[in-house]
Length: 539
Image (tube, one colour):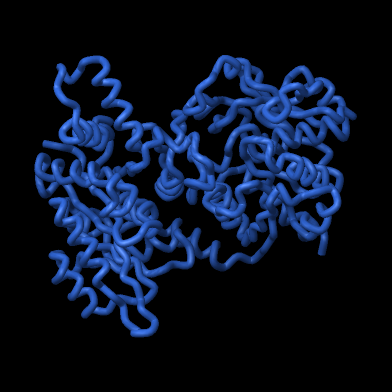
């Protein structure tokens, strides 16, 4: 008898309806009922992973503990469930085809003609079932990227059709997320787009069990009855997903709509206990009714697309709730920052985070922002490239090395205070070749980082090629910037701090990737706290 049950979440009518949030919300509810659950994302694009994609294309690239560069929805999964994902939790069409082609080159298909069916669909099914082999999940939720009707999504829908036939009706539940638009002129909700979307699925041999309907207005019983009748689902399986104030409201809205109960009934699983969500409700209460407020600048070069810094934005929400504080994030494009306008753009902020990124565009603006913050004793937090720019700014303006730079931007710099990592110098391919995943770090006692973590040994996730050049470390520390944390194996500087500054911390890793609702990241918590204290001092 199989241990795992499978839920597949598809989307229709339009993209960006929130399949990832619905998947994470359902997972949260069944987890709260005592089931072990995980979520995986199948993306239909041909890139092997999002690692080489511009953030404007696909939002941030999320990195797992084991070093997989994945879709940003995996961040939602981890933030909601408070459990790590892995390489197996994100699969793309590119990875599927890469595997099949490599198999063909090795002769594993015994000379047969390699086709979409059965070879591509078999590989999709194999990966859909991969997490079952781990043997610890009662329910595996699979989010299928794209929209029903897209050419690139067809092999995934076909794989789901085959799996339902192979594994049996009670093993699989199919949830279809669709849109019920409101026509203002007619003052009516329209169900026809949903009907056509379901019809498209049915034509591919797949009948959804549950319809989750995104809407701006409430669905009355007549609308639900109509959708159920024309889409061949039970009326209690027509779930309203009304627009919410925050993504963290969605699990509670889905609980009210009984999405978890309908799903478990479809899979013939017992209801177990009522969901234990008191901590979640308390978190939402603190998010919506804070007693304090700060405004923090986010200096980056992809600020036009909020998803480019999704994990950072969510980390501020977690840390804000922990401090009973609303964090207003003001985005500032680093390309627009100059010595002449830095005061105008940064004045009045309670602190600034300088964001990660790659390439030379907007670099001088980040350095200018850090100079402004350092010299005025304003709380500063630098992540990855933000930390590297802090080192460059300090070298230029305190060590009097005007040509200090990173060899990423200036390969001939006479003072490369940031340099290419030794094990990256022979790397030519871009995809999946950076320093990726979780690495150890040892903290110096007495530092702000040590105080935040409350321990000396930590591990954090990385995504970079360049590092602090230790040839400059002695001079830096004599001048007032210290290495607060190092990797014990490679001596790589992971954290820099200025002890005399009220809160000046730069980290080479990505702390935002480990912040969750239940476990806000300690550095974000302390940074927000420092911003609150600075705000109070200014009053």
